[in-house]
Picture 1 (tube, helix red, strand yellow):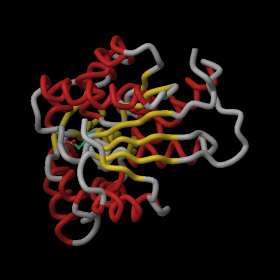
Picture 2 (tube, helix red, strand yellow):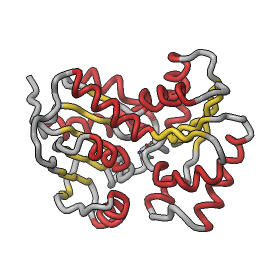
Picture 3 (cartoon, rainbow, N blue to C red):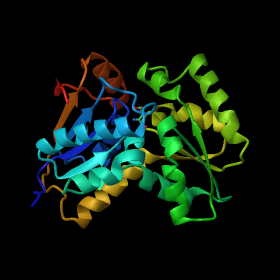
Length: 266
Ligand code: DGL
């Protein structure tokens, strides 16, 4: 039996999952949250499904040992490939980012054309198209892998000439489909949101991070697992490589300090 006061566990292949943590933190400020970023092995998005599955199991096992009450798979690639296997492996509730993002896209599109941008592994898995078409069979879905976005964000280049050129180059293809809705199907992409919005014009952007935080809140309420604490929850960070870069890019992004951080091996 899980107690309301246990932490929420969240993992990602690296720093990108902080986009989900940030939304979770603003929606559920009293919850204690443990974040694991597998920074030694990022990116997952270029790896085979077998490797992604193995890494995902290791991250899950680590967080289960931290006695979490709910697991959030912040990584789109892991959500696309491993979510069902992870759910079978553990007995606590698990939420990934694909379904909440897909639902929001179905609600947002007016012309029934949705673009998805993500890692190669996420796009190849067709997880977003399957989820969208399971909810609305008449929606056309166009997937596009944007592999350079992750290193851009990891490097902190989220604005400026180089970032703009790369975003423009990738988005040309998706713009020509006429999709009126674009899903940011990768943890890192919300950090490029302003640029993506500028380049893609009046398209509605779906941020899976926001949608996932809302889904987590609903699930906690549904399962009676919301904390009763009235003070701000604690944050604990684990990374698998040296924490310096994670701290510098992460602090700039979260706009709070990251001090409770530990390097571990999986
Ligand atoms: N976290 C990954 C995702 O959301 C992006 C980075 C990676 O490729 O590992 O798909």
